[in-house]
Length: 601
Image (cartoon, rainbow, N blue to C red; front, side, top):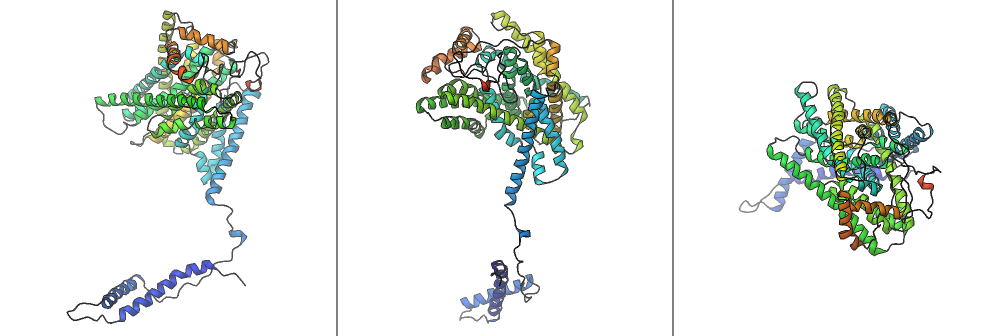
């Protein structure tokens, strides 16, 4: 005998309830209403009248109230109808396993392209991007929930999940003495350069619109579009420069500019986005400038506060558990970012300042083992997320399937404007920096002409620009056009400029294989002392630190620096030495620094 089928009973219950209700209403409707003296209706009479009215409404809504009830039975459960797991779990798992397998293949291909096959014209980031474009094309053929998810570049996921570890790794591995020695040039390139680039690009594109040579947009949209195009991402160039071992000052001007440039460009983009779709007056300019200053300064203070607070916390907790030390440090990758974003300011700026100061104040308070693990963990996260970003960028090239979104004139003139604006502000700022260095007697030598040209050439656009384009305000319906144009600009600059970097370095006769600086705590202390004696931004910062910060953290003069730190991720600086071994295989010796790390550069 078959088991009792509860599903059948559940399906028949509403029908039986309806039949019972009909019988009750029929009996109530057939009873006389009745009344008491004074024509006051009784409760029973009122109920009868209401029942009669309800019965008439039921007859109007049911053409055949006496139709036989449905008595179908459920089919016998079989293996063919069995559901293996929930639909949501299957789709999410399918998306993750596909993305991770493609990411694994892309990382291995990038390694072979760079280190084994040594392709000259295909950078590692370009190889990962190319894998995404090819795989995305095949996935796009078969329409499914997984393929749609893979082809979709979600800017929210990028900014909240992917970008914080990348920015943290970049700031965490800024070589402190080289950064402080060139901090004036870096900040001028990042702030003045980004603002100049935005204004030049917007002016050129607006002029081309008036001449009828390109697609027309409102000037507020042009300014916003120009700000996102000012975000440079020279990952491919930096990877080549690191393998060539160029002069540290040149490398860190390019690297430092890219780190701060992204933060400045994103704050500027968010500020200008607020004005798209509105009418403007002269006061709009002052509101925009005030918004930019408030957001950037408040975001910076949040990052500084978290870094100093964490250093103070480590000082008092005396943690000896490596797992706990690293757990707290990993959470600091996201907590300042999310806190600043919750307050409506820039999480990227907060995590940038947090990472730079964490290297200086937090890491020296970790155990030796935790210091080494933190350094390598930051590199691993940076490498994985950078590769994931470029892969995701390649996969999303097929998300724009309407050919009308690609405006040839807009793409051409945008590319020309990007190159020209980069050249104008790099040449102007480099000339000013050289003049100031010569006039002040700075120990840092002026930039050479070939180095200035290389700085201009390093102005690639990357995933940050495309993610910002995905958030472009769509008040005028131009977001898809901006996304398509930015995508083409990113692909051209990554493959062309990134692929030609080594050839350009050879043509310009850029100095390579520069001898590494001596490593060790004493050498770092001497270099920082020399910087502190100078009346420049780096010297002022070190004096401020010695007077107002170090006394409260009980730190010594050479407190913070894990010296000779180098950027990681897709930009992996190799240790310089006759052995040629990777820094990960080096061991501490008597000449290593006080923190137990010796990453030469």
